[in-house]
Each structure stands twice: as structure tokens, then as C-alpha cells.
Length: 169
Picture (cartoon, rainbow, N blue to C red):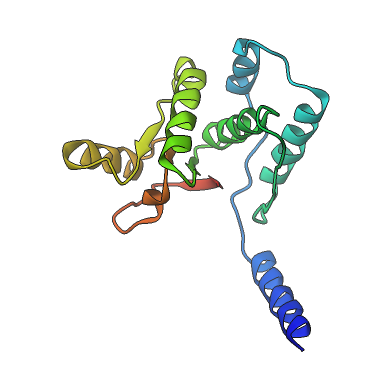
């Protein structure tokens, strides 16, 4: 009975998910090409395939629910960067949240290094960000910063996105 109840509730959740709409985002443009050229490595076949699948999902008007898994160093972060670029090219914000402050800070440093040359300055937000720094970060988020990286602090009261189109956990 419990298994049946769980299955039915999952089907209901799936139907609800399918009934919602998401913004359709055109495929990556010049920023994506420049990003790939600036990388000190080329994408593997699997990375390229997953990036294309995610890019195709982002073009749809239904929300994407996708799990990308792999070993440390397998390229999940570069795939996330490509998806964030597609969102930014379409005028949408991306929020990237990590379970620990250390991992979130690592993501912030990597994304900053990769994307600042393309004119995208990520915003950092965690529980440790207070005072004027927090006020400044919240202002940038509410006025359309393309990329916001942090911890669960991104989901707290007072954080208002301008045009959130992609969330990466």
C-alpha cells in the first residue's frame, strides 16, 4: 500500500510539473563560442553530448529536471557554465546553489575566472555575507545579475530575483 501511495503521489507530482511552463531559451550564441575557445581544454564527447541535450531542454517551454552525475573532474561544472551562458544570452538569470560554503566558494571562483572575460560578473551570497556586502549582493540580484552563486542563503526571505530562468543545484 505504501509503495502504491508513493507511486501515485509521484505521478501526481509529475503531472503538476508537466503542467507548468518555463521560458524557452534559444541556443547559445557568441558568448558560448568564445567561452569554449577560452577553455584550456576541449570538451569530451560525453561533455559535448550532455551540453547539447541540456541546451535542447532549455529551448523547450516545459521545465527541465535533469540529473548530471559523474566523478570529480568529469566536467559537470563546465556543463553548468554552458547552461548558464544560454540563460544569460536569453536575458535570464541563473542561480547555482551548493550544499556547503566551501563548495559554493569554489564554484564562485571558477565561474568568475571563466565568465568575467565574457562580461558576466557572478554575485556571491551566503550566510556569511552581511551588512553592505549583503545589501549590494541583494541589489545586484534584484536588478538582474546574470549569475548568482551561493548556499541555501539564495532561498531565504529577502532574496528576490529579477528574471530567474535556471536553477542549478
